[in-house]
Length: 192
Image (tube, rainbow, N blue to C red; front, side, top):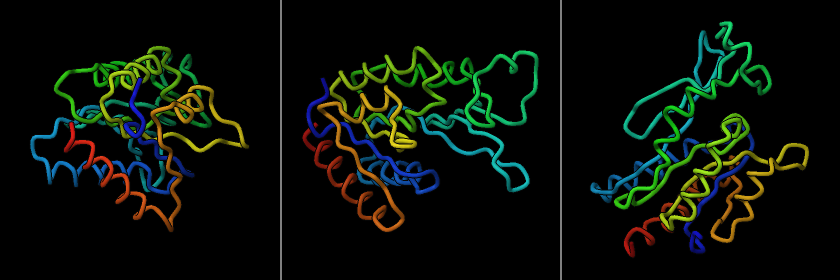
């Protein structure tokens, strides 16, 4: 089980800067520790003509694949699960994200952005996230804020995990939270 203080969860409303916080923490840590071995992925918006039309998964070494889209219309995509107006390409997500969650002994920090409804359509994803938590390697992840006061069961399980510390971002506290997480991770990595 992840030791207390080794799993950092960032939550907050859409657009508050969860992914940006995670990427800035990674950049700062990599700048001060050039040999740091990061593993995982983040999710970013796909835009067309200024409008969000989907999301893609990006590995930390820059490989990408579609996660969800409003513009893909194929016979196969008709069977994909939906989240709001987005169709989720589970097979594409699994092909890129699941290998990034394989625990390797030389990994210093896992990045998982995000553990959300789209990603959880993969039945293989959450068991891999739990393996990462059990590895005792520090984790920086984002999770959605509960909607209508209800958490997704897997997200609630992460939020309540004994090794997890959860930070709720707002526009007014995100810089302070970023610095707090960076500092705590820095301390962990020095001891690691």
